[in-house]
Image (cartoon, rainbow, N blue to C red):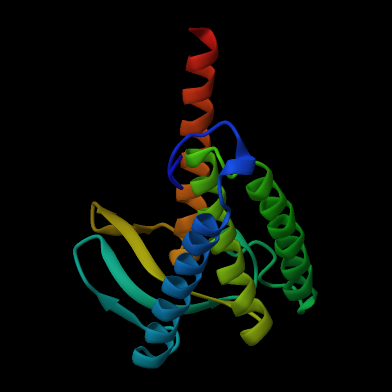
Length: 174
């Protein structure tokens, strides 16, 4: 009997619930960390942690890298609808491919990240970002745009998708 993390080629024999549990854990971790930031830091504040990392509390009404953040508000519902449509498609892929462990894990991370940010958009009209990485060169700081755990989960899921495709491509060549 294949486990939830096996690479069974028969999706009918595998369950989808372990992947939905991963999705739920991503959502819970994302929402908990955002709540802690909203609760413990003033808006637009920065708390230095290391020489290359700050905890910050900022709102992002746009998408990645604050894309469309300056728009008058329509982007809230546009990105919510887009994320929900993508989430429905990811869920469909997850159900159809639940026997493919790495692929399903990747989808679960992406789905959890997408829904974590949807929750922010629906509840607050914007996403809470709090991870601020930067480098200092010649006395000047260069910051990566602030992000959150949901964004991190989406990135991890994308990397896992690439690794899964590389693994499958290698298997097809042999």
